[in-house]
Length: 139
Image (cartoon, helix red, strand yellow):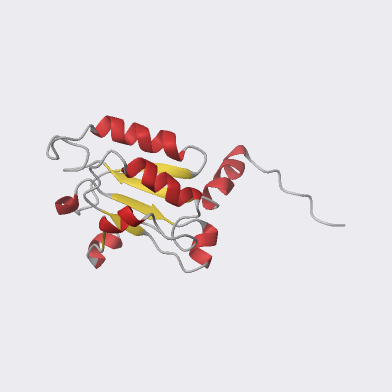
């Protein structure tokens, strides 16, 4: 006799699709998302990211990523397929333009890191944080 099948929980069912999508981490800590970065409607930017990425990528808000000189910071992490294709998290800094949410959404819809090149304008935002900072963001 075979072992009885394990009952899948709602939590397991909910977690599976997220691994198949990119994850977009939005820094909202010390400087990002605050008046320290003037001229940006931070709430509208976060709302636009959530709306434009709905169903395409998971959006996660985090405390300070310790890359304050690049505020506002967004990290686009690859999907499972993107990681298998060699994709790694891509750090975007100075994301203060109102078009950033649409550009990030277009990239994740195309597959994101490892599966698609970012729209040309996003290349202007890419930066490499220090190893210490990178290690604080889980892949």
